[in-house]
Image 1 (cartoon, helix red, strand yellow):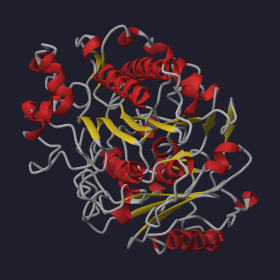
Image 2: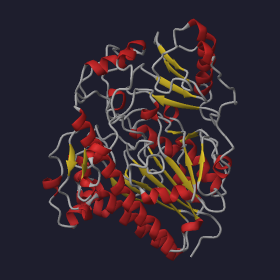
Image 3: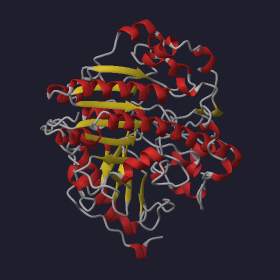
Image 4: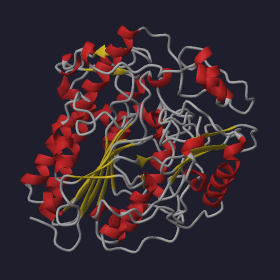
Length: 512
């Protein structure tokens, strides 16, 4: 049964997945089901999160607002559950069934008073009885954490594991944050299977009720610790995966960048770096690990296995949609909250750095008769645009409070660009350290509030950002123009934050 009046919306979301970790962007990785979505829809080369950090990015997808507006700017903050502007409320009021599945991370898991923090997340009797509402979603089946972490067996996923007879103490809480390799948890108990099972049941229920749905399926992979069950743990030969490491000229080139680049590199270890900026309390999630090539490759092979396992279960969801007769009346969007460095440029994990490999995410959209098949687009996409775009696809007015913009014109024609640039925000602590990254065609500007330094790159000629032109007098005018564009973004809160199409050209002959 297909829903005639409004399309279903299926949002598939992964955690810490690189742009080059899907098959259509990297033939070394096996993701046949995501590749199918790409061949039946559109793949984007320039998709970015509103911020490259878990919680604030997810909060933006709930609210349709940038972190600087909704206020949950880092992983130690929380978005209030009763936040006034929420996409799910708009869809509920239009008759949608709304279901939040998988990793939530909308309130801090570091705050013992948070509903997403221990010990509350391990109150399994509570989660057996409670299934929402949650941030406007009518139903919630929640998880938090990643792979073998102790808190990864909490909330609804933990209750389900216990109901299956799983001894969670055997499989969770026994590895470190940087560990990788084979996980002895049977795959039938893996969170990706549980998320897919839950989504499939919801799809089938929707087909029976003939009610359109908005399902947000949040996978917890491929976030570290990179632990994965067989056969996925052995799927990739470490000798054949990319060796992510310093690029030519690094780390010497870090001397021309803001001090935290070099300081993190010089203070290796998980959460070890303490930058000199007194308002940058620590490096946070990004770090440098003194791993040899063998360890880097083994970690990457496990990471790739995690992606392939997740893709397998995404395939099961797609098959269930097809079997229920709802596939072609469903707008499917796949993306991720942020990438993982994996050793690229000498860094691990996420945030603080402006390299493309650390801020760009994969994105695929499929909606037959509305999105052309087997197409690629270079139009700028920001995930903050998804709530506005989902409303428009459903034939609903976009709330005035949404700051994202409707991307359907760009999704229907790869030659169309709704955005001419994009801004990525980051404020890692409740302090004055505040970063904005402006990405344009061929240039990138990174502005730090109240700091004497910044970053400016001619990315068309210098894609690895080796040459910081911030202090080069020849680029002062360009720098000031790009700073003004960033300030325009800052001063237009609570309305769509869209560029005016100004082009920031750089004199390539003067470059270097």
